[in-house]
Structure formats: C-alpha cells, structure tokens
Length: 162
Ligand code: MG
Image (cartoon, rainbow, N blue to C red; front, top):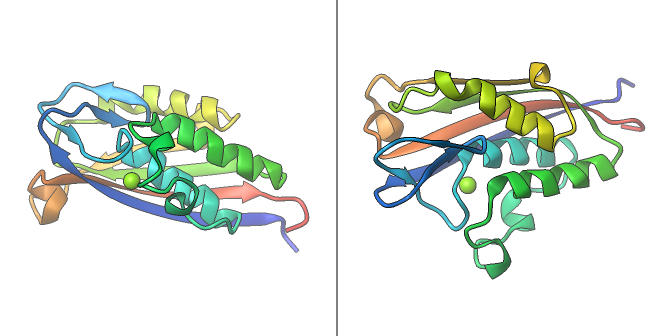
C-alpha cells in the first residue's frame, strides 16, 4: 500500500467594511475584509480542512467551534499550525498542497510569494511544495459580485502506516 493520503478543503467568507483582509497570513490592502469569528483567512481555513481530511480528523468546525471564545479573533495561521501539529502527531509529512482563491478583486498575484512562505513555515515545509493561485469568477456568483472570497485546497500527505 502506498502511504499517501489526499485531502480537500473549501471555505468562503463574506466581505465587509471595517475588517482587515487577511489571506495566507498576509494583510492585503483593500477597502473591505472577510467577516468571521476568527480573522476569516479562507486560505488557512481551506488548507486546514484539507489536512484534517487527509488524516481523517473531521473539520476545523469540530476543532475550533465558532462559539468557543478561545478562538475569537484568532490568527488563522495559529489554527493552521495547531492542525498541522495534529497531523504531524499521526506521522504526516507534507508532499505538497495546492490552493486556489476565487476573488474578483483585489489582485492577489503580488502576494503569492509571501503567502507560500507563511504557510510553509507553519507546516514545517518549503514554499516550493505549497502552491497558491487565484482566479476571478468572471463577475458571476458571490465571489464575482465581490460579496465574498472563497478558497479551495488539496494536500497530499505521506503517512507511514496508512
Ligand atoms: Mg472559515
């Protein structure tokens, strides 16, 4: 048996005024930010769910209940690191991860490099193993109307004994 596990994660949050836009741990200049209990970093949330899926540990809603004050306004990079510690406890190492953000604006390409470095640092990995990219939604749907920003992530983990 091949000791590999794949995981998939998805998240979407609403854009609101008076919030900072944080994606992949990078604060991005914009007139609005994502609303949520934590900093609503959809990149971290989608990737964390992908990792949890790969090790069969449920989802971030189970590990970080929205009603739990401990995680109010949490830095989602800390949540991601917490999830990675759990996966590492299963003996996991990251083969690679690939993340696609759907946002009509702002342009995210200038921030890919910093996001990849941030994520790699929390996963004990290197930026070349973590891909971040983005697409617009051609004006369609909630992302296309700039009502929100979503992210999807897949990850491949090597898990001895799997
Ligand atoms: Mg979320």
